[in-house]
Amino acid sequence: MTIIDLSKPIQYNRNDPWFMKVKIKHKPHKKAKWLLRALGLPFKFFPKHFEGWADDTIKKMGVHATTHIDAPWHYAPLTNGKKAKTIDEIPLEWCFGEGLVIDMKHKADFDPISIDDIESFLKKEDLSLKPNMIILIKTGRDKFNGTKDFHKKGTGMSAQATEWLIDKGIKVMGIDSWGWDLPLPYMIEKAKKDNNPEYFWEAHLVGTRKEYCHIEQLVNLDTLPLYGFKVAVFPLKIVGASAAPARVVAIID
Picture (cartoon, rainbow, N blue to C red):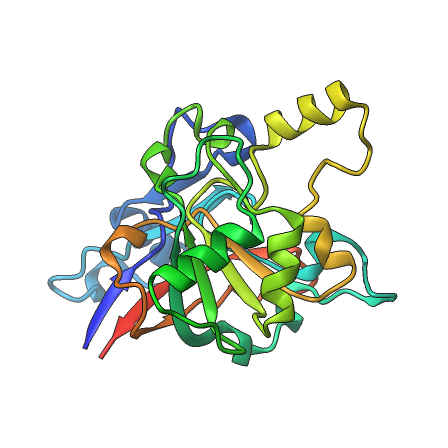
């Protein structure tokens, strides 16, 4: 069995924009010695080779700052008129399943991925979708991960293609770009330029009508075959949250 890590490292990166900054405090082993002493254990009773224990504190990390899975609650408070699921309410059955890679590396920046793009790829590769698959959209933009422009570059899913996948029985889908839609700054400017209030965040907002989850900021999709593997994407169980970091892995038997 081979396990391939599809998650980016969680660490401080000075190039990340403010809304993606992660800050972690690493505490050395020796600090635990003084904590134990304060709790009442004299130094003479410390085990011979005891150096204390290491400890770490996450001082700052948004749930969308690294590789994560978004819950329907992220898109809107309601899905089709009912309360949207938060991340702790996502069925775990959604989070493990047969994987399929859809290669969209040829798509230009700001050119949305359409139904025709996906259908053409599946036909060319003689692949088919099955309900409850976990679909991974490969754009190649993970190469910008950790750079200042990561959130400004890339293609993204159209609303129509997102809804089409949901209608095929797909509950969880993911992408190696910063976000599921086209880049956020681009969508803001285009919505204003075209005077179009329906344009912004259109793929995310499919979730107001149809229930689904997507994974953002995947890495290493180039190392996967197109099919023949399983995906595990179990989020941290953060009660009431809109998303959670996840250690996403592909498992090849």
